[in-house]
Length: 352
Image (tube, rainbow, N blue to C red):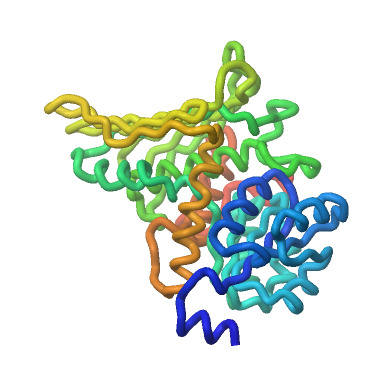
C-alpha cells in the first residue's frame, strides 16, 4: 500500500530509508535523512550492536544486523550503502531482488569489471552513486557558466582533506582494513566533480591518464591525477590536512573567462573573472567545515525527487558515471584504461 501511496502522492514524507553501515559516512547520511523524511522513518543495518543502539536512540525507527531481514521487515524505499568498497559486491548480492532506490557510496567497486557486476546484480533497483558535490548550487552554476566561456583550456582542483590518509605510497587503491580516506575514495569525488562541471558526456573517451603519489612540503602524502578530456587538460590533487584548514578549490580556465570556486574551513565563494571584470556569484559562511556534509542534503533531495517523480535529473549520478570514474582510476603510472573495449588496463587481482 505504501508503494501505491508513493505513486499517487509523491511526497517524500511517507518514504522510508535504510542505511547499511555505521562508518564515517553515517555522520553525513543520518542527519540529512531524518530531516528529509522525518523521525522514525530511517532504519539502520549494523553488526556493531552498541553503536547501533546509540544511533537508534537518535530518532531512528529500526535497527537490524541483517540486510535481508531489514528489507523484509522494514520495507525501505531507499537504501544507502555506506560500507567499505571491498564489501560492495557482497551486499549487492543481498540486494539483488530489491526493487527500490539504492544510493551507493563511492567508489562503487575496486575495478571496472566489479562495477559492472554490481550494476548487473542491481538490475531490478534504481541505483545511484553518492557524488554529492554535484548537489551544491555553486557547482551547478559552474557547470552552466563554463559552457558560456568559450573553449575550456584547463580545469584544476585541489583538496586538502581531514579524511585523506595513506600508510605508504604504494597504497594506490585501498587496504582491506580501511573504510575511507584512501586515494580511490578521495579521487573518485574529484574526478566526477570535474567531469560534471565540464559537462563531459560519460561515454566520451578520457585519455592521457596518470596517477602519481608525490610528497608535498608540510603535508603528508598527496595523490595526483591528470588527464585530457575532450581537449581540456585536467589536473587533480588531494592531500592530508596535516597542516592548515580543510580546503577545496576548483578553477575553470577558458578562452573567454575564468571561474574560481573555493571552500576553506566553512567559508565559500564562487567568482567569475571576465573581460568585464570580476563578479561574486556565490558566498557562504557557516559552522559546517565539511563541504561533503554541506552538499549531501541537497544531493539527497535530488535523489528523492527522481524517485518520487520518476524524472531523470542530470545532477544525480548513475552507474555509468561511476564506471567512467573507475576507468580513470584504474590507470596506474601512465597505463590508461581502454574504455572503448569495456576492459580496464589492470585486473582486479593486480589491484588487490
